[in-house]
Length: 168
Ligand SMILES: [Zn+2]
Image 1 (cartoon, rainbow, N blue to C red):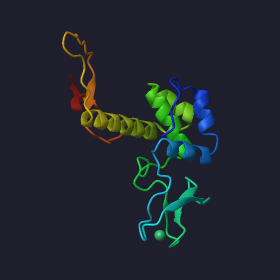
Image 2: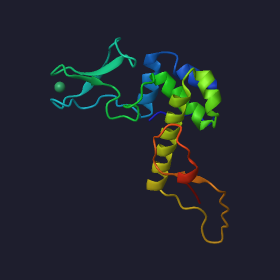
Image 3: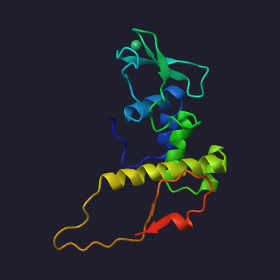
Image 4: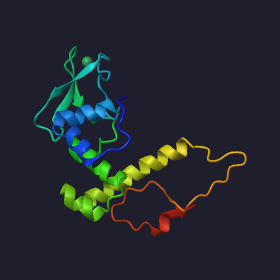
């Protein structure tokens, strides 16, 4: 997996997402999309080929049996309608704690789309942390923990979060 710089700037993001192909390469370099998945029909390796009729203009194609499938199948992005560059931009804005209203304008996306994806990113991070707990502190070490909210996985856009938030 490729290393990311310690500090990621908007110039880095712009460089990585300059084309559909570079966006795909970035996501493959970081193992968010497969490089050569096994064919669902014959188990041979599949390869990326262009398919310009799609919003994400690539598919995996099997050189043995000629089967095709979306590069998004079985990925984090399979249920999204965004392009790959929009996904990378939006994840960057979310990770930078950019308000929904600002992301809407800067990325020219609907409020619904931004909220939906922000919730999705938060749920994935929450799931990862709950399944990979870390130990804080140790013998003789005092740990101070700020309030933080743990959300149950919800995908209801615009749903009031107040009653389902658990403060720890
Ligand atoms: Zn095949």
